[in-house]
Length: 294
Image 1: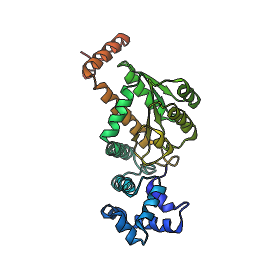
Image 2 (image 1 turned 90 degrees about the horizontal axis):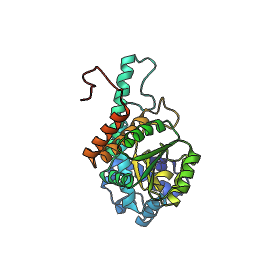
Image 3 (image 1 turned 30 degrees about the horizontal axis):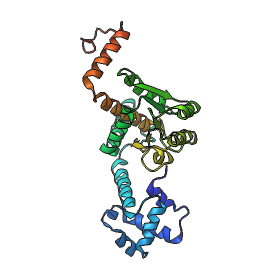
Image 4 (image 1 turned 90 degrees about the vertical axis):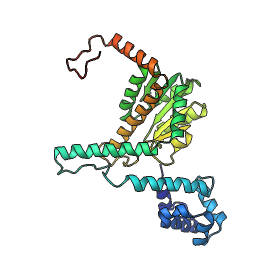
């Protein structure tokens, strides 16, 4: 995944004129919001059409499309990278309780990230995609597969068929032979893992509905998915202490999806869940008054 600011700074495969445009955009920062294509072009001494072609080279339809995405990225990074370092949230000298509070604060900030990145339209699309599916297949080769299992457990109790696939070869074969009644949820922080993309390409080729959970910014996976829900995007891929942000983000998004799907028929789903759980969990008891069922 390559964010816009990073692309502008690296200037890979940029011509001399394109490098000047990139520097001009970076220099303006948040003031870019007040600028039109004509004004920007005049300030950096290029034709407006040259600026538009530059935006198109970066994968956008035109200047306005680029401007919207660039400002959204700036707003996100300026608002959410000021507190706990997600990669190294605690120090060697920190006491136990200090570490506990720092992890709690990190979780709080990551939850805010997810909620701020979540749009009503994308959530509606994701819910429609899952609700229309008879079989939902979650694909993850990372530790998030264990989190995906909790989503599966909840969904099974309200009668939804969910598969969690951690082996990419088997996920690929599912994609080969499934039909339009399936939907896939691809979980990948970078959205760039080669074997995950191989599965996603097969899903895309067969026109099977696909939801992606991945980092903020454009990536190969996000461009293939029908809808994307972004996780908190603070951590490096490897140089971090525990993937705290990705893990709590995945749990939150899957719980949001489950809660909304549950709430489409809340009374019946609650009745079905309680009856099925009581029928299986015959000997589950507690003397704790808070925990006791009626």
